[in-house]
Length: 319
Image (cartoon, rainbow, N blue to C red; front, side, top):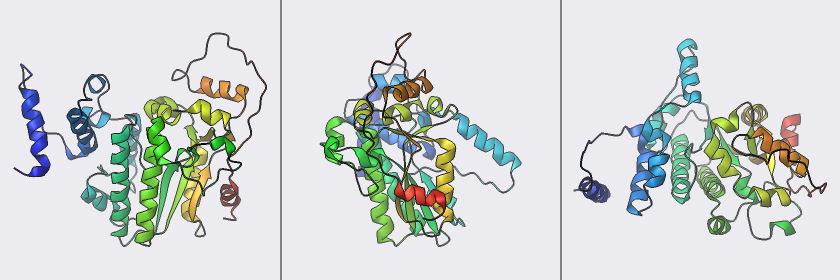
């Protein structure tokens, strides 16, 4: 038996011995990330109350609203071709990239984040960038990342400026269990390392918390994962939000402008007063809730630490 799958077979045999009624099904390749997560959780004894209550969406097989809309658009738009890609399956990425001139890469887990998902996202980023390196038609990669890949470290309060040169400390993220920040930090670093090694033209867009019509409500776990540590972000002047349409426009500008390079922080507001924090919480309802008839208690304004000189130049057309 192949050593790479022997432990999976052993787990299956062990589990089958504990079940009265058995049914074995083949899981499609598109569910690789979910099944890999499930197997690793199982081996660590961490599976299964959480998994039974909140099974990974790709394993369940249900389509998201966005997936349904994209397929509807494909039926009426002749120029649009939709591919189902498993980021852990290198070949599916190669097939989808054939003939493409650019890649907008946005890796996100609809099932939330932990240390295992963080590891899978890093592997996915490596596969995507390597596939771009092997696709001659690719001219540029626009890699979607997060501000959380830059803001988390010890003694953040002592720093005056946080800009594109900053990176989150992975050891601090692990210690504080900031899994979303860890995933974005490690995946972006892996993407940059490989892109530079393969001499690819790549820029990254590090977005704040994405807001827009029902965006957070349609992506609840990702939104709440971003907000892990929100009180500390708020008090340190690094809790920022961005409108989804503005974020999309910045991605397009980053691709079209031949002078763009490196990382770009992307946000249109820093939440640094209690009034703004309350408005943010209200916009995220029902994910976040405030006490009935809540009234702002203070007027303190926290110092803004995020800097966006590069973004300003890009938006103004002088990047």
